[in-house]
Image 1 (spheres, rainbow, N blue to C red):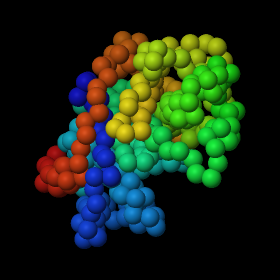
Image 2 (cartoon, one colour):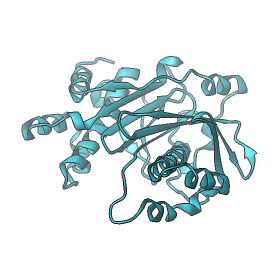
Image 3 (cartoon, rainbow, N blue to C red):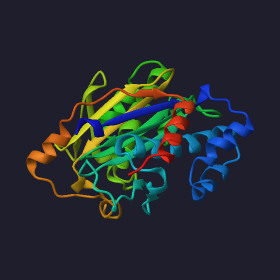
Image 4 (cartoon, rainbow, N blue to C red):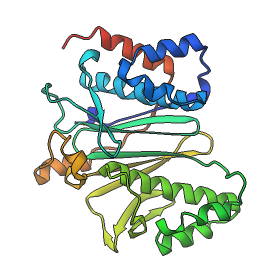
Length: 282
């Protein structure tokens, strides 16, 4: 099962493609995916969108050995991408993935049994307003304890980083279940020991069926991972899953799989994986 736990990340600031190189990378994706990249005006946004989709197809091939023409990636009503793999007898009972991008990084995470949520944040300093004004807009999303920890973190930059770390965890929680909604996030309260041994409560009750991790990514970025029982998925996402009902032993196996470090990849490596996937015979 451990082979289904993947964490990949790409630093797009290190990729400055010539227009023809960008076009070639885009041509590796199915044609129906092209508009989701080219709809962006800014090149940085196009790079994030392209690399996000390249990661999805490359991971599906690398982990599951599905030939590229048979990789079908769809989205739920809430916009969560998922692999449509009804035709395949896959080696993992509930393979799923999640993607995120912000600032310099684009990442993907996968799980073989439990749901996975992933969120990257860049510790970007707000423009045109103070840090206090910026974070105040989001205060309703945090519990009293979380908010106290944020505003008392230290310098204004410490406050900003503390805010972004909590926000990343909350986004990973939302993305794991596929809800797309941030309403009521103040009810989900995170606790940690210097951002390790992270746990959460909902309305004061410990969320024993969840696991959370937070990692620093390079310069002024972090990424959060959430892992939870598939039964927690919202209905539109649950219907896309291969299996929802697991025995206690099966679920505990998935919940307690070792966490793995993020593997840093370059765009050239993704291109190489995608090219191999075209030659794969299932």
